[in-house]
Length: 139
Image 1: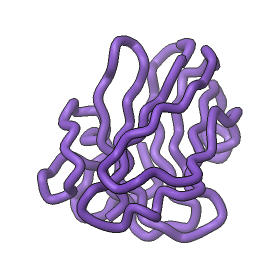
Image 2 (image 1 turned 180 degrees about the vertical axis):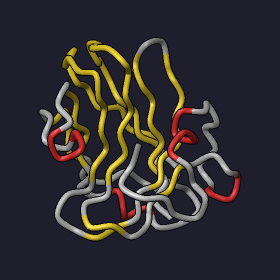
Image 3 (image 1 turned 135 degrees about the vertical axis):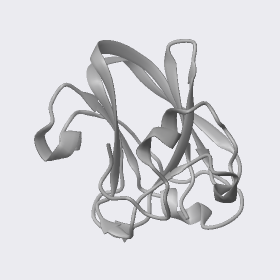
Image 4 (image 1 turned 120 degrees about the vertical axis):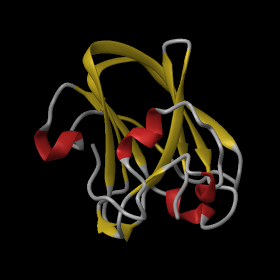
């Protein structure tokens, strides 16, 4: 799930295993320019999350990820965006990855949300040995 659909970037692209960092390669989900855009992964049961890796978009707009939050928990209050925060992403260079340690936080839902401003949210991801790898690719 996510806050809205933009540019035919359906939410399941964020978990299809395609790790390309250029939007035109049809590897990413994409929202509209929403106030507080979010994307949510439902793991279907509670897991301990060790790390989340975010790869920033290479072809444009790398600053859009600044201030995004990773939230993990079992609540769907505010679409899961009220769950405990694992990390705040201050910035990630274009086309590079950063891993955020969540210290085994438990939750069914993993959210990426950009609070407090209108923005586009584009994600691409694949599973990495039970941890979850997210590639954030703002349009």
